[in-house]
Length: 144
Image 1 (cartoon, helix red, strand yellow):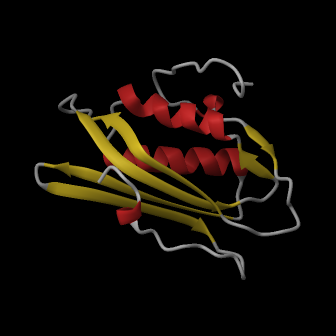
Image 2 (image 1 turned 120 degrees about the vertical axis):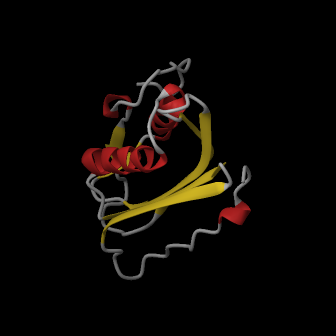
């Protein structure tokens, strides 16, 4: 519903922002990777911005996420106050609920605050055989 139209800004994450479309290749298992090198949220204690890189891999089942709605969903965290761990799991759980993928992995690499970077990882399901899943090398993603 958003594709090809002026973007709407959302002030908080909500699964209703996300849209799905039918997987055009249901008979083939393949990996989809999204990277968000400028993910932003707000520290719920200090109110200061937190920045990180999110890398999401998933093997679709019946559905794939519509990319513009996913971008709007990720941008909705910009004014959302949550700790790194919670933001990472909100994204993962939303995609699982929406898509019911065969497999999903998220790596969240948060920039240091107080000298300590916090990296959060989540995985659900089993990678189907013969599906190529590249290792996550955040050095190739700008922003860190």
